[in-house]
Image (cartoon, rainbow, N blue to C red; front, side, top):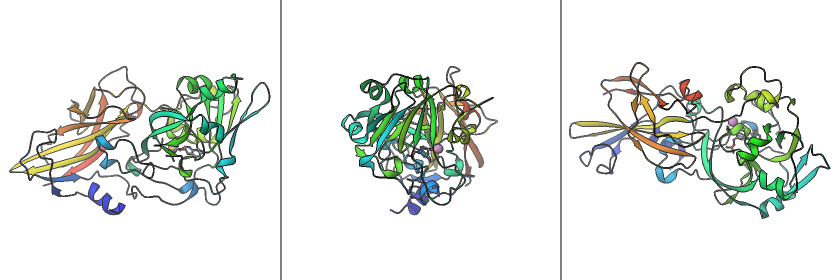
Length: 377
Ligand SMILES: Nc1nc2c(c(=O)[nH]1)N[C@H]1C(S)=C(S)[C@@H](COP(=O)(O)O)O[C@H]1N2
Ligand SMILES: [Mo]
């Protein structure tokens, strides 16, 4: 099925025979109930699951509406892309990473050495900090990565921290139009966050060698941090001081990574962590024998454990109610579902909250992940 047709089916109100009638976790409907999916309104109209454009302008936006419990790992050619590979990317087999800013001489680690040490690193989700309704929230995906942790890399090569901060720099030599994004990506991390947070240099994704668009031959994965810090095409790791100015990449994303106050120096930069977040991905209407039932399926993701204390409301003036079902364990993200009982026609805006004051939910609380549907006869 081509993607425009798929998108139509998923978002423009697919009407089909519900074959799952006895199985869906809302009160059973008579077999033969008709299902349709209510489209989300006031969102962008990007072509989903389709490779668009080249280089810095290159994008692939994942269609989240079709996520199921058995399909929480994103296939490699559906995994979202925020920037496609730079035209001048050189031969990966001869690639090496320079480690500089050391007390002694700079070091080189070859890709072949990294590949030889590659081990499974588990499932991690990436979310672009610019993931928004304009992109149908599809700048987000989860994969099963493999690679080498920085901790192991440093231990094996006898690297001791020369300073408290590391600048991880990618190869970004694009040609042509930069589409408003600043070329050149690097991020400066506290050394301790990288080591304790289990950051790794990924060489593989879902059992395959990393593709060029996802950072071949080497990319950084910093678990739980926004995509923008997950540098692709890594070519240099440099120890820097706490008074180093944030990179252009860090400045570009400062607003989206919750930075506040004086951020002239990296010491004042807060970790680009993704807080716990949740939103609906599809709203189904099941109609049969004079009854109509609505089911909302949604995602939750972000740092820490998935919550069992999600609440949802269908408009700002309505009370939050506990979410009914938690469908799958954590694979970077997990699914929930909820029976929705709208009282009348009209526009509804869903917002979730976490009923636990110990869990930080900065973006969620801003209404950033609100999604709306319009209900009519
Ligand atoms: N070198 C380099 N790394 C980069 C980028 C970039 O432009 N150049 N984009 C970043 C951003 S903004 C995001 S969201 C993620 C996206 O990773 P993906 O395209 O593999 O999904 O890569 C990050 N790493
Ligand atoms: Mo991003």
